Image (cartoon, rainbow, N blue to C red; front, side, top):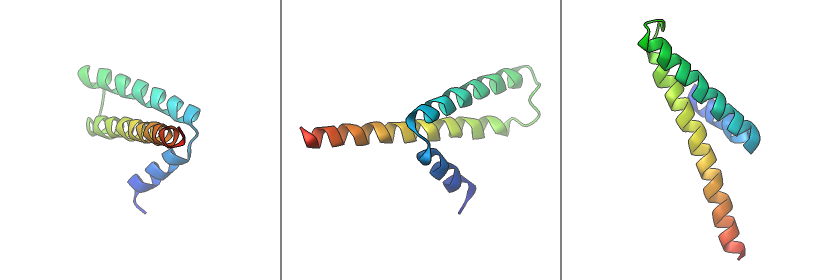
Length: 77
């Protein structure tokens, strides 16, 4: 398995509250990286791309869960 698929699998295994914490932490890290990039303290600006994509992966998993619960609730009604 590739690193991306392992990370996605790990994210899908997390409960909702831990996933929300991971999103908050990733967004905070991304914010600080952006500040560091603007002040030329970031040695490798490509980590911004990786962190931004990590945030997107977490948000995608959360949205998929939201859609899954909404469709399950719609079928039960």
